Image (cartoon, rainbow, N blue to C red):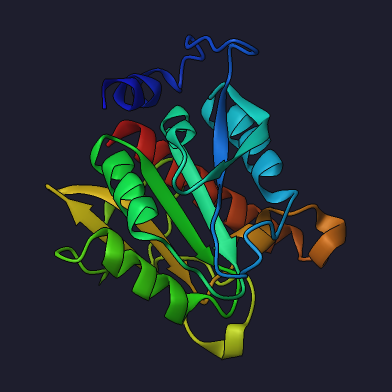
Length: 218
């Protein structure tokens, strides 16, 4: 617990040293079940660079891949999870993820289209007593450095459904933020991947920066 709190506290200063770098890394969660957890490979490097420029963070653009059940999960103060398909947590993995989140970690889940019914079941294993709740537009996560008065920006269509942001709270702390029908990660990718407009890419990166800033400062 103390390690994660220390990482979160010092992330904006870049004063935490690791054996290979003096920069913190964002984490990409690797899970079982057959879903493409590895989707959007350019997303996290671009988000890290944007946060460094816009927020003054000291994040290493070279993100780390970490398995749900690994002890290395605690090395990452902020972890991203995405994909299009099935998600399966073993009981040991669910317990490890729960302990990580209770201990100060933060998980952002971004439905890349198709993972929603599976990730909800998996999250019930992790926090059976704390269901996902939709966050109101006045939640501080939408009002950090960047203002999003109407909640999440709509990056990709996803059947035309409105973008929605859900969360799991533990003792009044937001430990999971789940973006649905939004596709922030696609908006973080290299422009050549999805060819989104500069305005859409900017909105995605700015909302991503809000997620990082809120997690580090809440």
